[in-house]
Image 1 (cartoon, rainbow, N blue to C red):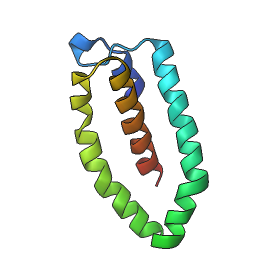
Image 2: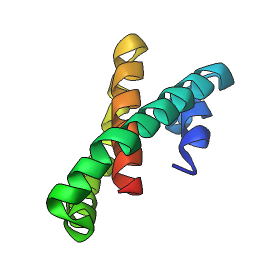
Image 3: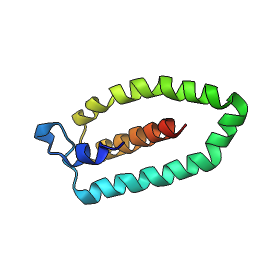
Length: 98
């Protein structure tokens, strides 16, 4: 997540998304709100049900295919790109925190 802002703001010809700083800020805002909601509602339930070690194992296993899918996001544009980027980034943050 540390390099997300650089990737999103880089021009498309260099492999980035070509987002403006405003667009990057909006994505990060959505991510922050989503992460807050998940950490307050879903994570405590999962931790009680599965235990912290199993939650970490599942998060690690799910992170690999998620991160491998990021380069394919460049095939989309407009609202579809924004929606997929928000979903993928939110899921990545949730898994990273878990």
